[in-house]
Amino acid sequence: MDRDRLDRLFDLTDRVAIVTGGTRGIGRALAEGLVAAGAAVVVASRKPEACAETEASLRAMGGRALGVPTHLGDLDSLQALVDRTVEAFGGIDIVVNNAANALAQPVGEYTPEGFAKSLDVNLRGPIFLVQAALPHLTKSRHAAVLNVLSGAAFLFSSRVSLYGIGKAGLMSSTRSMAAELGPRGIRVNALSPGTVDTDMVRANSPEQQAEMTAIQIMPRMAHPDEMVGPALLLVSDAGSFITGHVVFADGGMVPR
Image (cartoon, rainbow, N blue to C red; front, side):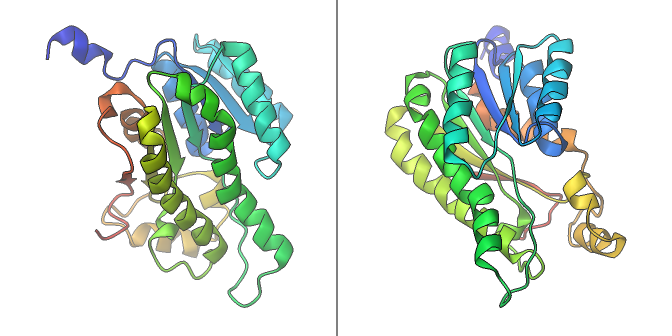
């Protein structure tokens, strides 16, 4: 491989990406990484002010960016996100399903409302967003979907079982999407982070945070930026022969 081809492996110039939950934490880091790699990035979040601030920040980096207030539990909102993206940038090449809901209810005490709220954001929303974007992904020569998972999909998750159920379903969906969309030239992979220093993690008690890091081989929290490299591998030409796969960037949390 010559130097020019090597330099282009992670180049996302002229590609368009949607990042849900893209205004903070892992999603914000991924949005910044995609912009730095040359992509036009649309960030989605429930809060309009957070979308506007992130859009401005990404543009200050020199990127093409748009913030679109979106509720992952609202299917009409997902279609509007796709439509706004295509209107602004002409197509869709990458979908990053990062938004999540960490609602915790004990096993045996689930409420129908809580169950629906959790699964709508963690599983139904990502699936239907890809479905809404599918006509545009099919037209792309570099189409890639990245679903962000969690160790909760693979480990005993007694306190966050609803979250684990959704993420395990998203893992299964990743494999099904990869198999069915592969003939259309669309790659579908997942990224499973470990304990990352985000607002979601910091919402736990200090004791719970210590437990979340202690189960890793590397007993520390990751910085959100540490998720950018694995994500870029999976959505760029550097990962052109990777599909249906889960990359664990988890400090050794999940035995495998």
